[in-house]
Length: 477
Ligand code: ADP
Ligand code: MG
Image 1 (cartoon, rainbow, N blue to C red):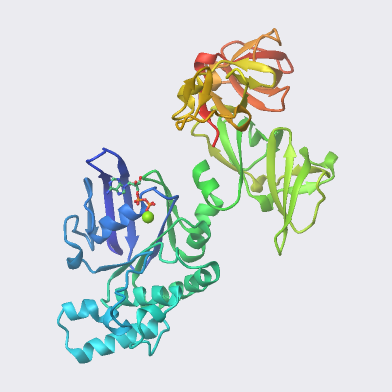
Image 2: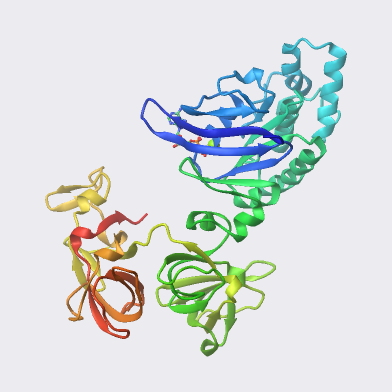
């Protein structure tokens, strides 16, 4: 396709030794001159993808095209691509000139030309006249500029940068972000940049590729990714947000966080959704004037604004406001319809936290759940009736919590409120073709979603039976 310099088609990288997959079915087109950023948590496959583009690694499946030609197995030195790594990897025994000229000397260029080119790239990275300096006299930021100059001196069509600012302090990093962006504009070449820092990605990129566990979550401009995250992972990873489980309760109506709100996303009634609310979109008011009310539990001054945490039942909302609040204040919270972003939920498992009793059972608000802690706590053992960790130390049960999860369809309702683990009142019901989907506000302040084939009435008090064999358990980190 015209305009694309690099295309990755169905790239998968599997490691033979352990069968693990670092990158899975990765598809991406990079336009000529674009600034594209791979963004994702550590271990999500960013470096592996970059290495395949550079030619240091080969995909197990798929192909890589450069200007429309297959380069999947072309060696690195045959590609018009250079890489800048997080660790500068300068040669300590050579001066700056020799460090930068190293690649050119291998190409046997005339000395005059080498001198001219080195001078030119030193100008580019704002270190003119540094030719004779030794590497050890440079600061971290200056060393990284030299590493960039060394990559640029080869006049690559594509510059790959793998967390190049990761080793610098915050102030230096901010400065270098601006300089790199200016350099990109000045040079007009393609930059593929890797970072795990969402702010860095948002400020620098034309296009962001959000990755998680080897797969692309979303590709878009910084504005797209921030304003229209495709799923809860992206929303959570990009900037501060509040994410709630919710359910569509009518046309442009959604229930979450213990209240019903009007929204702009036209999603079918009864659909289970993830709802994203940006902290700056929450409107604080007097307790009676909000859709939901809560108590301020924390206030932090951030220079330009306050970050305020409000607890409402089991829910917590982080709010950014220019007006201060006091811890302990009762406040109302509401949202404009365009302050609510709805995403179709990828899973709608009910989760709650249980504590561990002295006799190694779980406790949820005074009710007991049986759980095999040995299989939940990695490396744990039973020694003379005492639960120990892998080193034989007794585990302090007060210090651990267990996350319990269960599917909405596995929760049973009973008209005996004492019958199950918890009980609550039906606050919403929706017929979904072959079953009803209920929202039940529990006595403990949670809105649980329960699927049931029978019709109950709004307002009914029901017991909720959560079968132990349908629960899954995980140690809370
Ligand atoms: P990132 O750069 O996003 O932090 P990487 O691309 O370095 O992630 O790694 C992705 C995954 O692939 C990780 O789980 C990592 O442990 C694994 N991995 C990377 N290189 C190898 C290798 N040579 N052999 C086995 N697993 C690897
Ligand atoms: Mg990496």
